Length: 68
Image (cartoon, rainbow, N blue to C red):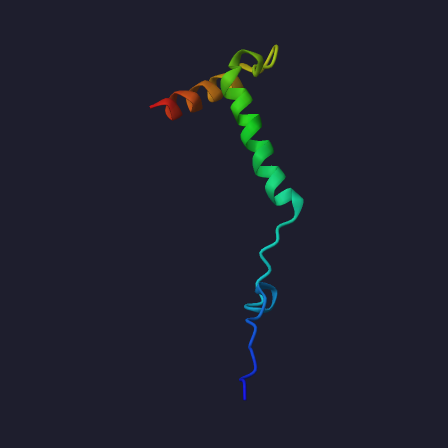
């Protein structure tokens, strides 16, 4: 007499944790990365024309602190 075969449960029935992500969970980090990469590669185009001097000075200080 042969023993009945047992098939393991599929991954959807194992722990109750659904690992599928919505499309924006991947798209938003990619968009943020590409935006920051463009700002780093083209810093001359990132400056606003006629910007407030206080904001410009603050951004320059932040940039100097991050480059240390």
